[in-house]
Image 1 (cartoon, rainbow, N blue to C red):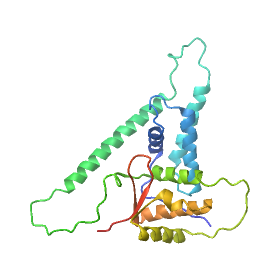
Image 2: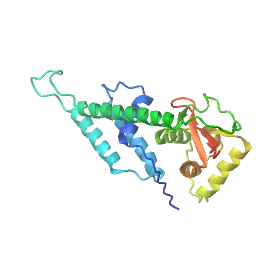
Image 3: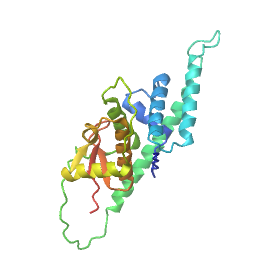
Image 4: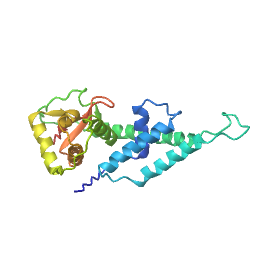
Length: 241
């Protein structure tokens, strides 16, 4: 049975590159193309495994990275010093820095807009009862697609290593795993993604569970947060109040 997930907001290849650079604490001016290319391809494979709709710009970025990688392997022209040879990474770095500047500016404008929306003319407001407290540590930052993919990759890497292969049919659906997640959240207000999948032993079940989570995020049934960059994913019911 095939599943396809289409997200309304899908980060692009530059977002993935910046995510990998930040994750591995890489100097953006000295990108290790070999490692970054391999990491980029790994995330692309995860997207394909989940049957996410991968835009053509991701494939284009792979071609750019492979081209740079090939140019770095070529010997420098005879008689030219290393300083005289143009670094093939230069154009990519410039585009990354420009993209990062625009993204940061867009984020600042969004935050400014959000603050302005909170301002109203003075008037009478009825008392609003407080909702359940959320600690700043627990819900510090929003989670993007690549944070979720990282959690999914860690879950797959932590599965027990099986030395034999047994072919058998596993009947599992997104609907079943949606109910599984909801049942967990009805028992506790918040659950870590690692806790959600820790007792699952079949790879296909982890995949379908992750896809169910993506669908629930899309339909605003749950929200996901991190206490810090690259920390475990925290899942909570979406508050409609």
